[in-house]
Amino acid sequence: MLDIILFIDKISNWFGKAFAWLIMVMTLGVSFEVFMRYVFANPTSWAFDVTYIMYGALFMMGGAYALSRDGHVRADFLYRLWKPRTQATLELVLYFLFFLPGVLALIFAGWKYAERSWRYLEVSNFSPANIPIYQFKSIIVAAGIILLFQGVAQMLRCIVCIRTGVWPQHLEDVEELEQVLIREHERERLRHGSAEAVDVVDPSAKPMGNGGQ
Image 1 (cartoon, rainbow, N blue to C red):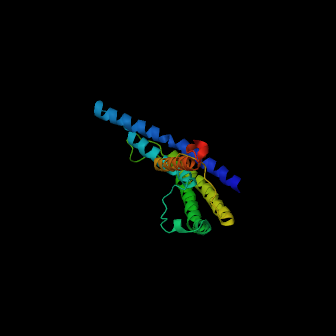
Image 2 (cartoon, rainbow, N blue to C red):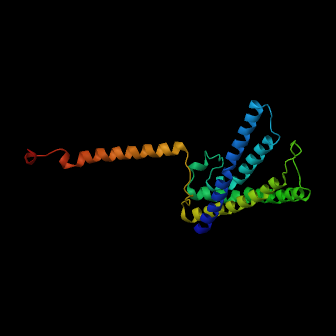
């Protein structure tokens, strides 16, 4: 079961990091638009479309990645006080009641929108450049499928935790700077505490009796 969880986590990790590069595309597009608009007084007709398409794709395809890292917002003022088995039991129930119906609805509705959009090669009504968006609507289906697989992995995590009483570890990834600083502070504190303890118990640090004279 842990191998299945790890495999799905790796898939979500790959998609999340691959689509994260869209931030660079979006940044370059906006920068080029600002340069053309304010330096040459010649704004582009496609920069706005690139911005919302890149951001939308990043937002949707990053959902499974965030779920695999437990990165979604959680109102856990009570949850954090519970034992792991209680947390896992509640999460498993909520996944069945809310997550699965919601994600399946996203997939089926997204399929309907994407299929209809591909049928007549839909373009944006808000774009003076008539940017095609049928391929963009296909991302709704892809994001829903990946999110569904990651949801299955999270449900398996709950089952493992219910059996063992311990949450399975997530893949190591980029940490928040705050967490890095806290960990480094704890290491320094333990290092200094160990050094002080050695100074107290080490006989060579302070000769005792006449033998040291």
